Amino acid sequence: MSTKMEIQFNKEGKPYIMWGDNVIQLESDPVTDKRYKEKAEQELRETPEIVAEAIEELRKLLRGETGLVIPIDRDDFLMKFLRPCKFYAESAFKRIQAYYKFRLAHPDQCYDLTSTSVRAAFDHSIVSILSPRDQHGRRMMLVESGARWNPRDVSLTEVFRGVQLGLEAAMVEPLTQVNGVVSILDMKGLTFAQIMQFTPSFAKMIVDWIQDCVPIRLKAVHIINQPYIFNMLFAIFKPFLREKLRSRIHFHGSSKQSLLSHVDASALRIRHGGTLPDPEIPGDLLWQMLHHYEEDFKVANSYGYVSNNNKTK
Image (cartoon, rainbow, N blue to C red; front, top):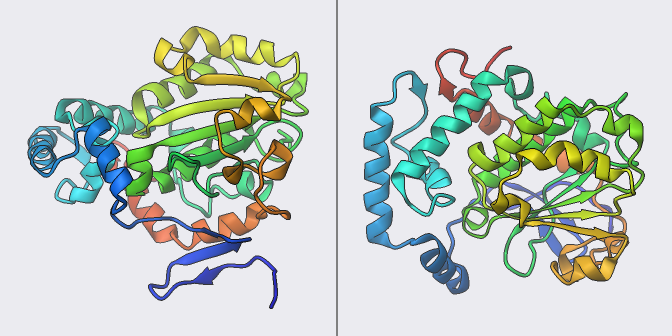
């Protein structure tokens, strides 16, 4: 039997990749695991009564929002924002406003967020969103912004757009909505030339997007293999970090044991101290799987304030 990694399709026609014993795929099924259903109730207040009330209240708020084109009659769409906001409708409403106003304010970063237009960051294996979940059921996102990133081949904007597309895919997963995302930033080989790509305004934009806009429970950011000059880069971001996000950033340097104290080995690559099999999934193969959802990305990209709907610059 061939061990070559390739796109396969299940009986529903959805793509997946076998990575050793791991099935890599987008998971759109409802949360059925008792452990995570209890977690949703305890951490997010998710009960049938609260969910129904929050959905109805959020719909009322959205009907009064002029010029915003989104599918307010789709419960699954509203849940994408309600879960990270613990079913407080007013908070979810503000998050929706912020999310789409961000897209309106930053067209170069957000226009045409489809797999076709956001390929480079995946082809160069800079952004990887699909791997086995960690011990808490959280979706893992790896961004390799050191040696693997050549700004001449993949611009900083293209990296950010790749991150957005990956999280756009993860946002529709009910299990990710409940458990959240963990990001690992591998800074091995970071250079001064790469640091110079970042400006304070760009750093503020990214931090604002994370803290106020994107509907994701970002549970932890693990920075690994950072060289000494990383301090220069972090100094650009630090003034914009609020305490909640700052407290979730962990610095590990080259210590694999330090990272393993937070993330189980089963969710990490061998070079990061984990047990995921070699060879790793090629970035272009992950892109191919995301590309299967191209029409879904196009639909998601059509939502927003009518001033631009994020379709064009």
